[in-house]
Amino acid sequence: EIVLTQSPGTLSLSPGERATLSCKASQSVSSTYLAWYQQKPGQAPRLLISDSSSRATGIPDRFSGSGSGTDFTLTISRLEPEDFAVYYCQHYGSSPFTFGGGTKVEIK
Amino acid sequence: EVHLVESGGGLVQPGGSLRLSCAASGFTFSNYEMNWVRQAPGKGLEWVSYISSRGTAIYYADSVKGRFTISRDNAKNSLYLQLNSLRAEDTATYYCARGAYCGGDCYSDAFDIWGQGTMVTVSS
Image (cartoon, rainbow over all chains, first blue to last red):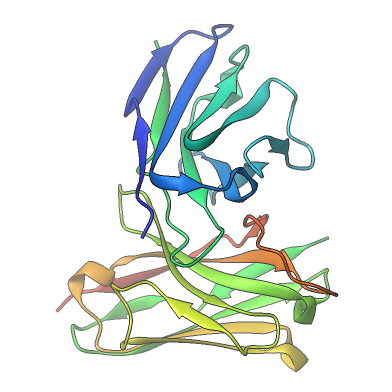
């Protein structure tokens, strides 16, 4: 089973700042099978990025994903008020399709 | 518009059973792999189960293997999760989520559509 470890647990930033979120895998993950999701309180998760760097439909270009092997990154170039939320990474190449523990991006 | 709507959650005693349903609309349900994902109160996301587009391949998380059963009825555009031998640690919001498109060849894909979730509470 691939274990995904996200860091930091909480990121305190101001609107307009850059956010860098990390997702480290316990073993190499094909970059084709790494996704990022955003979840706001009381809402279902929303797909942001698939294939480690492909934005989902309707996702603004301030969101970008990168990485390979065991190290992946989600970057939000300039935080908008609606971006404060919890972010999860997930691998989906083979079962079990594990999620990371999440990073909360909160307003500083 | 593409929609997934879960139902069937509720309060159940430890050891009890529940059947969750997920109604799909706005897309050709039979062409997609489907999943169940759960989230305990205040906790992160946990993948629970997967079923292929035709129901021929099924996977479970170790935490639910032998107790939960996933199934689908493509004629009714519906996904199901039978929960048996429920435990307090199964308390969570359960989401159905759409996976890969399998109109021709199937390739793994992220979960692009999610329902709003249905809450399951296991308590005496």
